[in-house]
Length: 238
Image 1 (cartoon, rainbow, N blue to C red):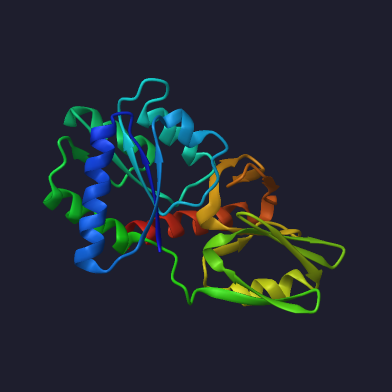
Image 2 (image 1 turned 30 degrees about the vertical axis):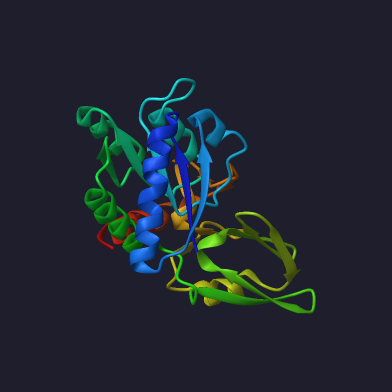
């Protein structure tokens, strides 16, 4: 199930996108869970990372697509953003918020289907990319992409995900070994961060999806920055 959000203030244009999604679903057997918003302000209100793809109208009355995307990127670095616009010259600004592409109205189905196919190939939520953790006597299966960071306080491990927390007794080293090779980095003695959820880097810390600011120790800073750069490059190639 692909989670799609549409923010478009013109009902007829929303209907066009919905019809295109329905046709694509029928032709390709892809299921979509669709949420509609009449303005960007409605989308960003209480926003949390749950969408795979967002279609954003560039020009909306209360909050345009570009401003909506800027706010969304503060908490969601992964969602695929596609702008829908009347004027192609505005679309170049989309690269400032890491938009994948843009579609020009009226949106023809062929162009829509091409961009949607490209978007689906970029999605980074493989079902088998998960870890199994023993949490309070039960086994929890967590998608790696949903883990924001792991925290250790006095042998108490807390895994912070996009929408929950999981606490158990253990060592950070054991968790680090479990996550090795999956895009994580140990920023200091207390934290392991998911590099894909780093939204900004400060002189002695990094800010994560959701707003948590975590310390990056001086000896680990260069390695952290190198790992972050490598992760960004790797995702750009896929």
